[in-house]
Image (cartoon, rainbow, N blue to C red; front, side, top):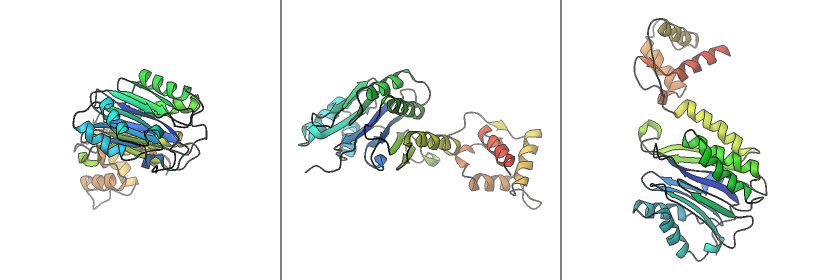
Length: 285
């Protein structure tokens, strides 16, 4: 017996060779598609398992990738051992940028995939093949970090036709060495839109929030002279700095309360994004 309802969807698995990031972006007319399709592990690779999805392809495939097998070799092993392979759809990218995609002959039409260096794009129950082709072209041509490129690929796929049944959920899952909260895990970006009329646009909105709260700063400004006075005034007006509170204590409470600790990386300096947050927060008071 097949394990799950059909996860009719389109997805793209990708790798950024410059940063080592690996991940999956997916959209579907299926509740909480992020709980089924995307799998990734730093030091292994990334996998999308869909159609009549066999979720064990995720952990089993990642274990084979950890052993050094190529994306194609892993795919071949998974499919060869699966009596329901004709109903499956899978995309895999390994740590070397090798890729593979598979669409079983019994997947509901339109169904198919395209694989290239550092990516695999696939989908089933689509309007037509243009969705997958658009995702592949977007990934090949786009610039920016992996999160941006994967989301843009999804958006391009939706514009080209998407899931023939409509849209409901989307997800973005990316791993990076020590990329998680506090550098204590490899779970870099993990965002899900479980039920929404415009799931890709909502996913992109969540990604911008993730950038605000979780992405490490690219530059820092020294807190001195006029800038230190401005920040002190902001903290005072927001209620963090008072007559009996020193600046360092007020700053720690502000950063912790507002969930900006991932951007507070060096004492005596401020991330321009936090400075902009302070200015905008006061502009709406």
